[in-house]
Image (cartoon, rainbow, N blue to C red):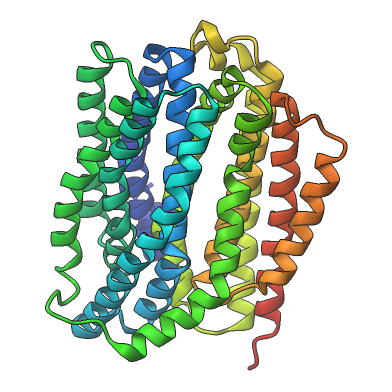
Length: 430
């Protein structure tokens, strides 16, 4: 037995497997805690908020995602691509980070000008008072402020694969959110309180994230014109796609809030909360896989093999999840409470759409990390044709209708991103 163990340790792949095992165990265990905290917090909010308030909370969270995407516009992708080239140089990495943060603050103004009026309209349209709409919008500010920098600051430790401090900070933020939510929701079951309880811990965690990031990047560096040009060049190619994904990713909530009713908005938001568990897989890939893919040499064979391996494993894993949801919908829906227990088929549709969207998002992250950008005309044209075609035959006022629409949009996006990534790899010259 000892001899076999010794032979195993001498195998050329032993160290590599052991290294990946440690990384995945560290990242996975921490993310299980983070996602568990977020999931418990979400279920707590679903159960304690009245259906009307939870519908407003869903709209606010949806718009926060829109605001974050618009304020980024591809900047984080540009920082990842530029940082991947100079990640071993503390000063140059500091310049890239400073330039990205400067651009992000400027983009935030435009994001607010676009997003706030839309949020107000959707809230008022769904029976919120003017005072409630103002309070919910104001409550979004802490989370939005933190989002302006945390996604960029995380890039630095990810490039250096300094995972443990990053995970500890995420666990602390998740714990703070759960504690604050538990202390407030029982007494003040209002949407704006739930939004505020999620944003304040992120502000605190953001300070610690800066300390982690600036351990690898020089925080005394100033934005650089040349780096700004490089990042903006990628932003110009990515921004139309980012805006489209921003709209497409939230289109089900927007459509059901306009053509449906408040109950349907709450149901869609509650079902989507279960799909948040998939973000565990997304975070692991974004933390461990995407930065490594960004640093791979421009070898056609190597990039293609890694891409097929990543997507193949994801498809197998996500297929198992869909089968489990099909077989056991009742205990899963029990988690949401009695108000949402009669939605087994809708649950299957929601999870299926989320799984396909996750595949599309990871495929997009992989090729974007290489500095590649799909021509917006191709992406938007095909997806708009899909939306128009499905909208002409689907009842968009029903929950099932918008979930079918989401599956169609996600599937077309997955085909496009995976085929484009394959095409760009094949086009690499020796």
